[in-house]
Image (tube, rainbow, N blue to C red; front, side, top):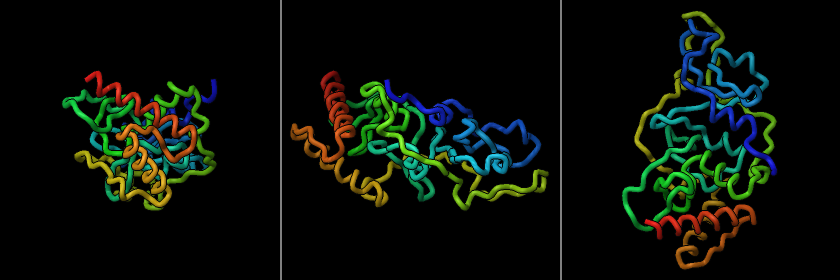
Amino acid sequence: MGIQKPAWLEALYTNKFFAACSIHETAKKNEKNICCLDCCTSICPHCVPSHRYHRLVQVRRYVYHDVVRLDDLEKLIDCSNVQPYTINSAKVVFIKKRPQNRQFKGSGNYCTSCDRSLQDPFIHCSLGCKVDFVLKHYKDLSPFLRTCNSLQLSPDFFIPQDMGDDGMINETSHSTIVDYDEPMSSSSGSSGSENISMACTEFVRKKRSGLCVCGRSANKGSEDHMATNMSRRKRHSS
């Protein structure tokens, strides 16, 4: 049956973030905005010293949903074809699905799971949508998982040393952001993903002329091919 969802991925899905930490309930800035991938639990900045040798990823809030920096996620799993957004000059990816009823009929890209309208060439609106798509059609996540033995918080994330009320935390650790959707332009991708974006853009151009061809690996090409057929069926059924 292959590899299903790894424990760290389930932890990102199921843990509650931005709640007050029960261990440091009297401390300031005690919201649980970090996921320890080794312990599979959410922690606050005051908990970090106890997890200093573990893989840690910061969770942020964007339009009331949990997001993680694309650079962090791509060390763990292939995020190609997932639409990123830009907040504070950083690219982020939504963790969970964001279902949306399609209000307008017509051509365009729609999420393989949520019917959310997307920019070209993206076909998944969140990491959860891509994972469900892969498991449904391949029953195996292993071709998309990446080996990551070390993952630390960004240098600007200040770890509090003083547990008392006078302890101050750098504002960068305060990560609740409420803003409008601002999809990242596909032309502003990082150097590591530019080739993928270009290949997918070429694929979208060709699929509109009836050619289901993608200059990527067989597994990813099959993913795009099935997503294209699903998108066509959705448009016909509309």
